[in-house]
Image 1 (tube, rainbow, N blue to C red):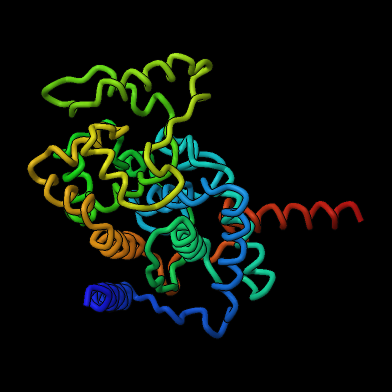
Image 2 (image 1 turned 30 degrees about the horizontal axis):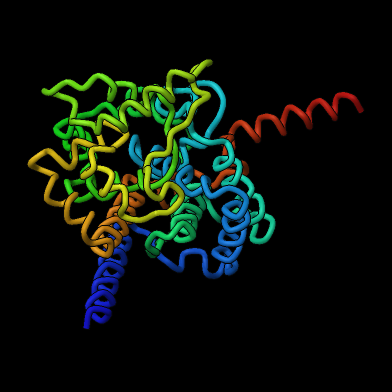
Length: 339
């Protein structure tokens, strides 16, 4: 009976995802004719990268979140160059291995199918596949996103919630993007794997009873000793989940109960009256966490999309087409002049 109930929940989640995706103007079959092998190509490249480095999974989820939250899932965070999002504070530690993987997938897909699939679609697909490889839930991905012509503004990039945020600040930040409490508590569970640098959790060493949730003293002492060796800054890493750091599961919520949440933003979820009940439920019921996480990932990946004739499908995920075409024009003109 329990397995049937779980299966029913999955069906409900997938149906919800399908309805939500349709409302966003996307379709699961968008590339069925133009690129029938799309999902196989993405899955192969993600599996190869994951086999070499399991850390590519949390790195991809972080890239997707940092792409979608400021101005929608439009691959703007992949752009490089002047005024790029990657040059701004919240994105300085995005992992090159994951950024390079997305571009490698883009190249393979475009070789097989031509320039038919956007970097935005590829980012969502790669993230989903890496999540599954790490033990997380599968969720259906509807396709048809197009790529931004330019990066998000600095003001938008800095709307990304910070590790130092309190729960009220988090609720407002998510609410401003039409993400609710369930989205906040479940998506925070992405910290079930991955790493952080000392600068992002140094405020946990000096707890303030008014703004900083309690931390296990032994855990704090270990962190402080470890970060004392962080010279030069950024050379020391700490796993976000001390129990199963390379697996996507609900042990992150166990960490919070044990007062071993790495970030203030994490630890606050288990003590604040608005979020404690849901965080506790997820610690006791991994199925409930996975179901909500899948829903919230679909919801987030469908925010403020470019579709139809909007945006573009990039030749290169890191470069807007106008810049590629400009370089090609200059190169051709130079060649003609030399002749």
